[in-house]
Image (cartoon, rainbow, N blue to C red; front, side, top):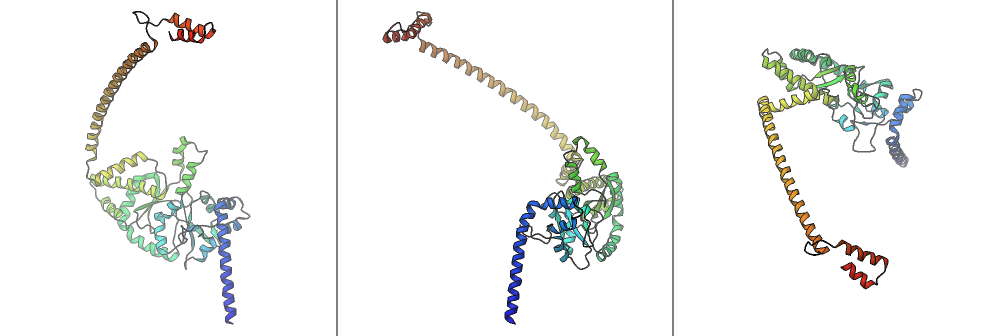
Length: 392
């Protein structure tokens, strides 16, 4: 019996080794043709389920440094937590950008596994294949995101208590940003950041918006049209972040200084959240200006007065630099003229020394030189006489 058990164990080990070898070989195929398989999932509805089973993913539970450590959807389902209702995924432009997204923080804290999707085609097949074995796929980029029922009940109670102190700030954000955002909500999935931007359930994610902008047939002159046609975004606030707490306090103050400070911070936080969420910042010049002001304030710099002072200094330095360049150019011209004069004198001197002189005027006797050359060419004289005349 012991021998039989040992044999069974050995057989199981051999089977596991064979499976690993087969999977390793398959991963090589997947790296080469994975995008094509995903495209087939979009275009071939008849064989969609079979193609889905061929897909492999990097996840929050796989070793991203191990080239052979990938997971299938069935692997994901087998590792799901008790009571977990969704298959979570996050799309992005690269594996690194997806892994660093703040949207992952709370899920990883709670032990939920997340699929990392960073191929452009992922935005398309996830819209068509919405559930696997009866389990719905849930995008972290959408505002429809939810934990399981129990977690959502707890989070709802928690947000009800936090909403009381945040309400004035939420209203101020919606009023200030206007039609840029659909609504402002408190989020139970943020930890280290004060704000993130998500898309409506039926809208473009940040990654999908980038894909639409990058289409080869997109006219760059129509960027404004793309901007206006993009679905409105949802602002998610972290009520337990220090910046949100301080802004909430300032929102209740009625002084002009507090109002301007709050509005500047809201706009800066919004643009920063757009960047962190993967969206495009359209008003980049305005964003850069506000960031410069914010940095200046942290350095205790009088931004306006110092900027005017430096602008005047820039004009003065420009005049001085232009004058220096003019003087350098004039000096260079004088040096070039002097060098040219010296070269000419040297050439004339060398010409006189090499050609010899005739009479007092020192000119070359061109007739005699021509005559000697003709004699040499025609061969009328012998070599010595010709050479002597050429020499002369």
